[in-house]
Length: 192
Image (tube, rainbow, N blue to C red; front, side):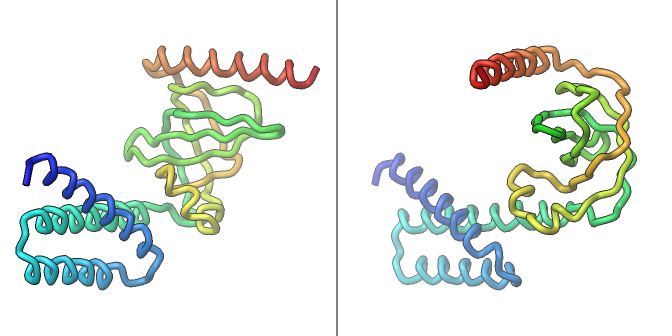
């Protein structure tokens, strides 16, 4: 067997392992499922002594373990409803809606990502450093998969926000301003 075929077998096993992990992640007892997957891979190795299957099984195990570890790690870092949040954060992304905007911010100390729902004005740009104080809402508890796909571990509706300063994100800020002006022009074009 050629070396690239081993690589393809490992990558295939890893992808199938992560897919299996995502299918079984909603079940309550993840450890039992992981060990069942491990036992399945081990029994396949014992029954068929081929190196290609060994590479596939190792990729499968690493993929499933990776998914379970990442999923477990994210769910352990979720803030609880009513927890207070009084920290500094850097704005990463801004989504503007008709009556409010969503800010995706990263906590300066812990690097945890939090979503803020705030009024349209004042305007905050990517790289702005904010002093934020508020309480977490129940949105994350209602729709955890929606938020966890973007690594958001908490949602705060209308917190007290104070602009402290700007970080060194000059390129990101310029790209955001280009995007905003393009969207503004596009919306004017659509409305006429």
